[in-house]
Length: 229
Image (tube, rainbow, N blue to C red; front, side):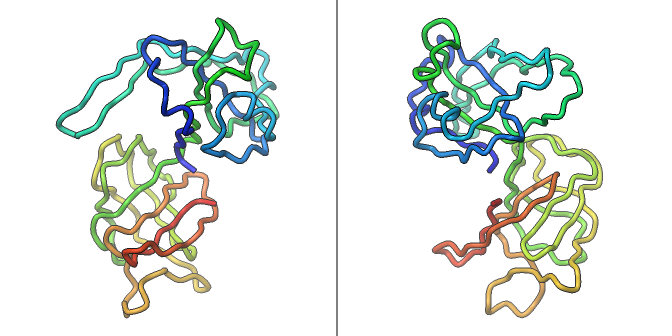
């Protein structure tokens, strides 16, 4: 899923002036994210479960918020200080995602008017910018959106995998990896007119440190697109 901005949250002009809060979604949640959901109450009434096991857990408020244009990257950037939840006690619950929202009314007692803004499950998309053969130990990619740890697994369609060799910082456009591998029962998804095992330039893949299934689709340009289920 990676990051999803709620449509209603696109109106969040109060990022720097308003009170932006973050809650943690529990792994027991059955919430299916929908861009059409508008308020925290929509999350809670559609199977959403907030983390509650650690006694010290509490929602946090973003501080040090800034908004500025980066003309070099041709994008508008929102930033804030890192959110710290402190040391959460060991619990039977695990964190599934973080949900950011605009608090209305001075407290969290009215979730029906607190505006959903962003849901982030910690996964990022990785897009290749050059073909990669099975023996390749370097992947050329678009600059990655977050730090990736040594040993993280990148999973492709059909069971092909590789693991990162070393930590990689946000913005890296080359990933050092183990040789790409596939099981005997698996195969690489390639265009029907390609008679070699390779990953196509521009192909979307998913970096899933926890591993997980993916869906395969073909976009109008004929590329194979991998999306996490």
